[in-house]
Length: 328
Image (cartoon, rainbow, N blue to C red):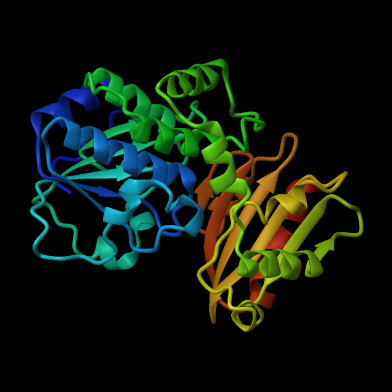
């Protein structure tokens, strides 16, 4: 990317960059979560309300639970030369590679890049970087920048951002939740968010395949002898046999953390033979982002992830040893 500025900027400066430019491509990370999807949807709608062109591109499909957000129907999932791009905005991505290899391969130095994120492990890869590790969700940042752009917040924008807040704060129960987070949530509710609609779509609309996947996960949960580590293994063939490939419920890993005495919970999901997505959750003082970093990943103190190339057995042996080294 051209003219990379490693310095951090703020909401007002990002708003000015967005107001001064047009023809945006908004990118999120692979296996997009609620914060990523909601933030992308709201920013797309906000830019379009200002008469600007904005396309969203995700390498992976939008999870079913977020498709009730109307803007997601217009998200693209394949690079196309008909997208008139001048500016690329990365949302909720701690590094450029998080957008996925197929999308990253099409990016070049002719684009001006903007990076909006809340991960402490962000490597400030863009021309303009606004990274705030102290906020609970990237949705908080998008709320602020839309306000600074003087965008009139619609119900659709507010609902998308509220989904981001709800999912990245664990329904406002994670320690990352602050008074500022709750003030943003209040502002979104004032804008007309239907909290019943959000609750039903996010937590009360599971498919039969999701239920089968949860059952598989619970059948495969193991707790260490000392009771401080719990992990779930989801082998590719077992997930395939129940028709749950491509389903990534964000809540599955939380079953590990809900066990009394467990300090670190881990999810090993083989998304294809030899490719393991490793998720981490923590209670207490353990910083799982540092553990994830040792295998090329990153994230937050209490929630992080990484991709491991190798067998499930190798992934478990490597990761469990790293966790044990931290706990002992």
